[in-house]
Length: 195
Image 1 (spheres, helix red, strand yellow):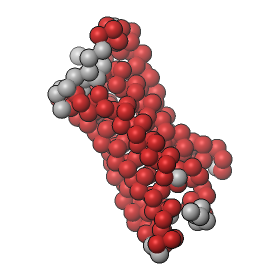
Image 2: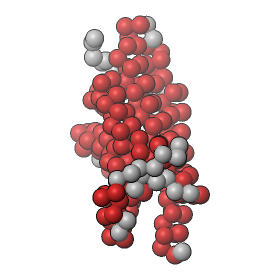
Image 3: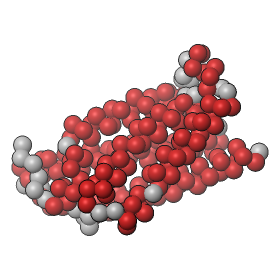
Image 4: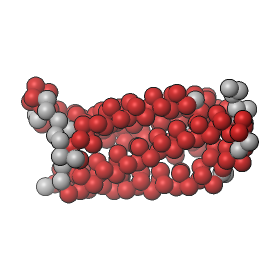
């Protein structure tokens, strides 16, 4: 299969390869499986790990690590304005891969339990955002790889070009879910610090 020669594809590099996108989706699935199981009422049972994770220090450490990762993810807007070329490419690649680490740290922080009320909504919104975004990346990689051979170059442009309709709609949904996650995370922080 020929590599796409579209300028939009050259900017994002490895992200256009289907097997990398599928690998990221599998890693996200493995990291979030205990949280998804907890959503269905099947809690994670790791007694030794749970003993350490129940301590205040572990909860604070994993909470601060999660917060740092979320701040890194939120800083992409600043990076897009401040960086160019290879540095921006590396930042975007990290922005796509770092949610795997975020899910792992959130899994440790929550001890595989999704909580109740707003905490449950926070975990649900976070999982929805990460899965929807990664599924979109996988779809875009499949389109980039097969569109030219199948005569669907218009679909490739709509999905992978910065002003394409599918790309803009996906980006809008991503930003909307990010705002929801940030609001719910803020309420979580307020409830932990003040109540």
